[in-house]
Image 1 (spheres, rainbow, N blue to C red):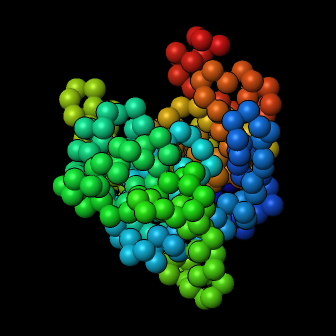
Image 2: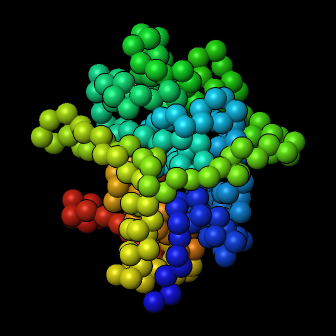
Length: 279
């Protein structure tokens, strides 16, 4: 009964920042095995705004931008930076072979890929072949811009600078609620992956419905383990907690589940039978 009306993902995130600005939005680790660091809603929005501003400055407004990598704060910020005013987000499955990733980049008309560093050789080769529209590679871990890939952190720095200078291309972007903004490829269990075309409207209707089935409050901490490119984890374990003012803690990997559970002590854990059986 207390569901807050939201128009699109951008509106959802902006209103959550207004309501829960100083609350923790994310628990993330800067290095494997290190302590969890808390990121507030305001800090997360500043990062997303800066990255989105830089992406538009690269000429990617309205373009398809893919994201691939482990569940992480950087993955989440990249998703928000693309969907909340830049272009069409194309989440890719990190378990796919290079040949299928190349096919999806071609099929999705992807012009930029934001990736974890282990995927750099794959996408460098795809780009070098020149058979796709791929123009930009962005490494989540690179500290500096390189010849082949741009640095995620440097783009956030330059985006902040642009915003300080008065650039509002991303901040003032208008979202068309019922236009395709998300291209989600299926798992392809019966053949090749198929692109499902989703709009902001599709997603926010789910966001507004889900808390009528499950009580979620700002005191909750979600534990993110399932692949974030899947619609279940992305909608229910990422966007819905942000809508309700909760926090999200990223697991370091399947073998660290018990360790991370004891460190962050989450209240919500989206899972599947296989994981439950193993722990």
